[in-house]
Image (tube, rainbow, N blue to C red; front, side, top):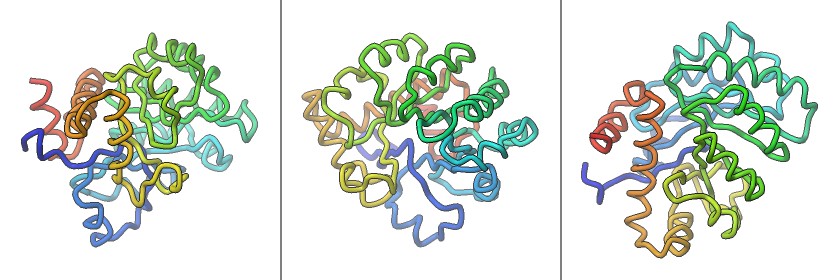
Length: 254
């Protein structure tokens, strides 16, 4: 596949594990990193074998039952089944202690494992960066990160990447180095502001980033994939990805 034929890329969206083949065909070949919100949902997703969807193991910080289910045994099993751990992280809407406990279990068991991590941080950006400082990981992606400019600089020193969407402000997007950017829709969240009609619908986001960087839209899609190739190569996760994506990224790093 040439760079001019790259499919849409969505590094953080939500798709139900019982999605049908016709529904997947409706994504028009988009490569989607599909987050789950609980270990039970992740277990169902792990039984799938989709050519362009990378299914995650999630324990959403806003769901107390999901946090409680993120036990050592559950996470150890997931590390063997999933190339992606997400959605995980911290959220301001519930008690911090159980979230930190679950996140520490997850990060500790992901250490030195070939994985990508998609991290939620709504309202608790500095605490999430503290957790990554204690247990850094080369595959960390900060999803919809709305921290301060100082938070973003701190995340960069931790070698984090950022999955961004069209609901984010131009100012915040401009604070992130272009070589750390990855696209996301977070579908179905905030569809009015992201203008994403489905997972993988990143057309409006690409136009936004094109204008911000003063580059053609076609170059922005190439940027997404080059950044993903660099990240996945560094994290050692390329061999674990679906074959089509694996082969494409391998070409970009050789």
